[in-house]
Length: 267
Ligand SMILES: NC(=O)c1ccc[n+]([C@@H]2O[C@H](COP(=O)([O-])OP(=O)(O)OC[C@H]3O[C@@H](n4cnc5c(N)ncnc54)[C@H](OP(=O)(O)O)[C@@H]3O)[C@@H](O)[C@H]2O)c1
Image 1 (spheres, rainbow, N blue to C red):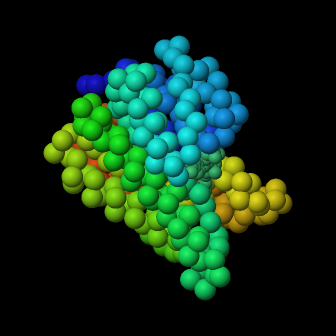
Image 2 (cartoon, helix red, strand yellow):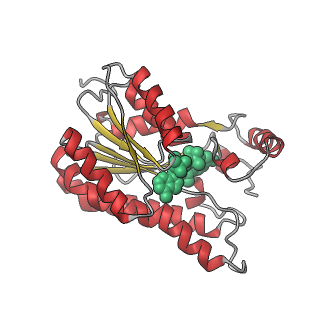
Image 3 (spheres, helix red, strand yellow):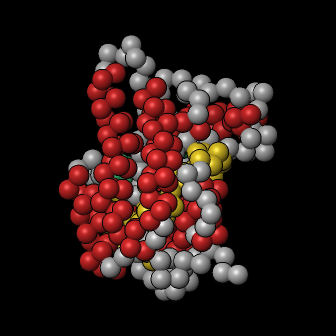
């Protein structure tokens, strides 16, 4: 029986690691012995997470910090190149970086600009980075974990493009699972409902608005609480590890029962 969640000698690259789910994932995987490569645009926030990774590392490893704006294809290429230059391998790619939007109704005056922006950051960037990473993942018979959303399954009010992009991430996951399975690479995705991360503050929500939203979400969720970034990080650890060795092409709904609740409503 192999050692559960053993990331010894594994190099794990996590996008969007300067905040929220990506940060929690980087810290969790560092604690499980992984060599993490963390990336984001905000250098100060990324460095703060690196310090937490280093502190939690059971192997005394130092996270590699790479500042990158994945909207630039050259940054995606550099991110992979720097990882390979430093460690010579990539075992796990966690495609997590994304933006949320609540202004993409088809009738919005700026609908086309929002479409281009969200599709670029949330879908194209994942495709591009995966394209650059796959040759290395084939060598290690590695794994890809995409962070999608329950909005891949059901539309969210005023976030048409976000939902479309997430839906495509699920299809990317399933298609890649077919393409890369014979080469030993597994590809899965996690579909969280609302998770308590800084995304809502980044988006301009006040503390009062957030508190009200979390109270509503808790009431409508059978498990009576919103999700936390650590809930998602634990699911990433499962898909990234050999514990999920027969799982590929999976979309894991991680929602505390929210989507099936009779009180479910996205608004
Ligand atoms: N929170 C939720 O309720 C929820 C629910 C379902 C799914 N999700 C998904 O979970 C993932 C993480 O969300 P979160 O809540 O943790 O969000 P978050 O706290 O806002 O973090 C987003 C991360 O993405 C990075 N990022 C955004 N655009 C980027 C770009 N162009 N280049 C490089 N990095 C970029 C940000 O980097 P900088 O800050 O350094 O710019 C940040 O590290 C996303 O895919 C999101 O769609 C979240």
